[in-house]
Image (cartoon, rainbow, N blue to C red; front, top):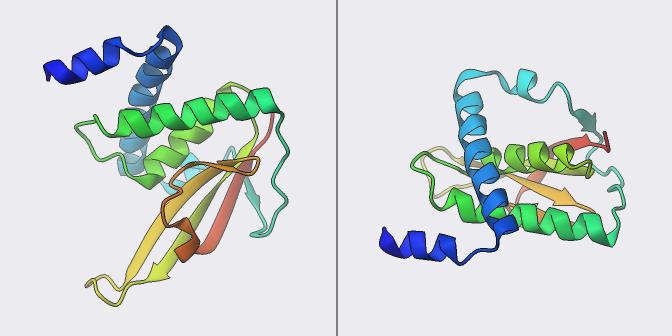
Length: 152
């Protein structure tokens, strides 16, 4: 525990703010996943065609989006609740939309003959050409839905 606190104190003040915002938002999104319908959670988003052109972002927005993604991934490792890919994607959407940075998040599925469920699902978020959260193994999944948000 002391190691984790030491590690946190070494972060810059901006990284600490992003970490805390990501941590709280992950909790809110996890609670929403458990209590609110997915349709209701995504009604403020635009449901896009699967091959929609990704909105271009400038270098400053991309830098901010990358920092947000890193803070979400970092915070998800320390939550006592499950902060899987969907909670991370929804958190990225909220945090980036708050900053006026457009992006998309994908929902995908794949067959998994080895597990008893026979299907696996995954979500990942993207800003410009950069995958912000959920990038590991996303290419193995078939995209089922794409949700986007623009600048506010």
